[in-house]
Length: 425
Image 1 (cartoon, rainbow, N blue to C red):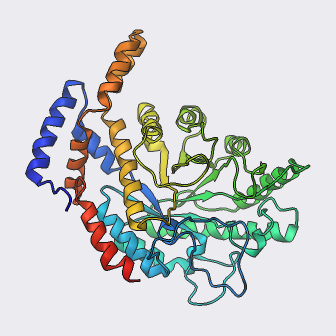
Image 2 (image 1 turned 30 degrees about the vertical axis):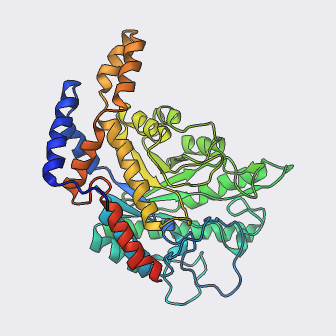
Image 3 (image 1 turned 120 degrees about the vertical axis):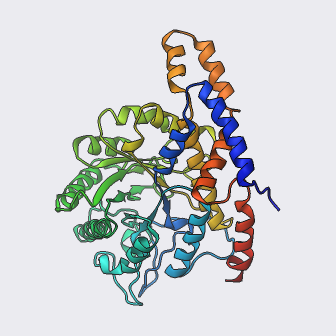
């Protein structure tokens, strides 16, 4: 149904694009090499609507995360989720990683609470990771649990509840270390909690003080930094925490600047009129590394599937212009249950890679020369011309080199998988 570009057509168009970019001092071959070596971490929770595979002995509630929509065929077993991810991998060029939450443990039908999980409950994931050459990243899960019912976890005033979540986070860092050893490279752990209040708490100080103390205890445990890297993630507000979020941007900025952990920036965790790309050059002047959650918020932190829009382009322009690509860990974070979930993974990852490629083929030095010489009109004119430059032909060559469908041809494969597998579940 969709256009199939032959290798000959892709090569011919790429040669023309390469010649064009050469006139403005851009080496497209080098850009493709850099793109091929840049890993994107796909998030497991897009494939099953953030349900996970925990076994419960009671009704679970509290602190939840809701995926909106009812498109048929979400994965409801770990094997099914892995197969769906493999299909997405086959449609996405370049290096991939896979990002797990703690609720995706496999416990062989046994109830294992979150402060008791260990590497053995992720043995199947680690084997799959090694078999497929896809490194894993990890996240503690501080939501959808009875002890998260009142909206507080690591900052909870109750010692028993807070200590439960501290133990959970310690377990997760040990699991991440085991994953890192298994895959031979660091597993990136992102620490995000939903803690906060719906309306006007009187005491905004004590929960933040408790959160500092909890993190200090968690990170004091000796974990090999070669195999586990930690990031702490801020948020503006959430459902049930509209007025007060314990882990605000200011809180985590302060923590990250006074501790070794990375700061995590999620594209949807700020005011709808606020973009994170302007924060990159400030944070990386002080921190050696940064973790990004690539998402798309519409009016709030709605975690829409990432598309190639200006927010995404500007994000990667700042990273590439600053020579900071090797210092940024790129992960996806969106979940849309209203469309084919494999398609969502593929659309979002390919869009992220296209935004990075667009930044890699930008003639940064020419633009800088215009800016430094005061030639503002010339700079703006070139930036506008670049918007219609033949980056799509460079992208199709990348897909050809990586052995995945170029152009829109991958949509036919998605249609086939949807009709043959997804809608038969």
